[in-house]
Image (cartoon, rainbow, N blue to C red; front, top):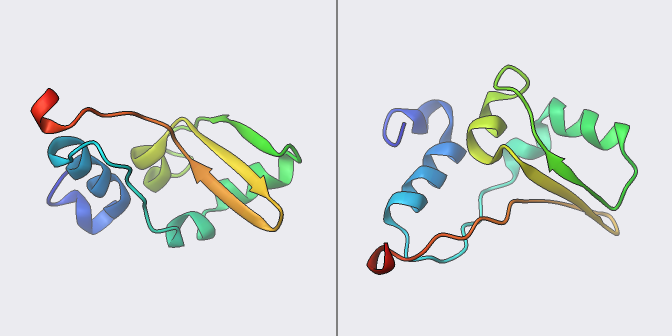
Length: 95
């Protein structure tokens, strides 16, 4: 998944790389994929809450998101949509 998955699911591959080799810092993922996701658009249409979640989905709903951030929140902040997941990883030295 780390190497070959990068071609099909780059977001998931980045998260896996961060999990294995990070120093405990936050990871930001490019939002292009999430902006195009039909699953995200439908979820936003069905909910008018400021914070939606935790949102979970099946792999068949949207593999790119499911492999990357399954169990996430969507926050509406004025005209901006923020998708986030709060997972804390220790640095390599503390594992």
